[in-house]
Length: 124
Image 1 (cartoon, rainbow, N blue to C red):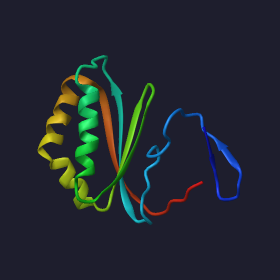
Image 2: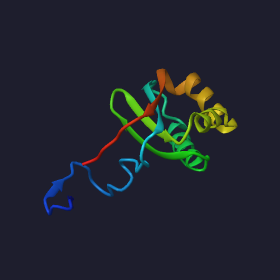
Image 3: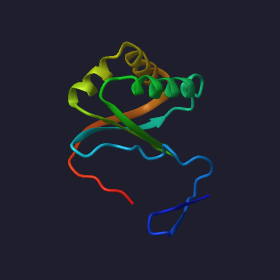
Image 4: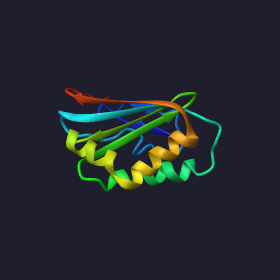
């Protein structure tokens, strides 16, 4: 699959399938990023369903802007938010709190969360 850019050049993608949504479409800065870096246990039961549910639930939250995620040995999920208040509301969501507890109990060996203010972005 290839994508044509405005100059008429062709970019060849290493991905198969639909490329839409792999990179979040964020507004002009400033906005905020929550970076969730994790190492998984070997437990798979319920993880995929919960991860999908959390993305869908986050999309319904006021102030949610988008999400990007990748996993190899280490998982990195970055969610984008309009404000620190929106991030606090998401962290306090009851179903999200349940998912966090399940993650600590069975899906993650360890994780780290970082919250950043995005001051500048650009794209190619």
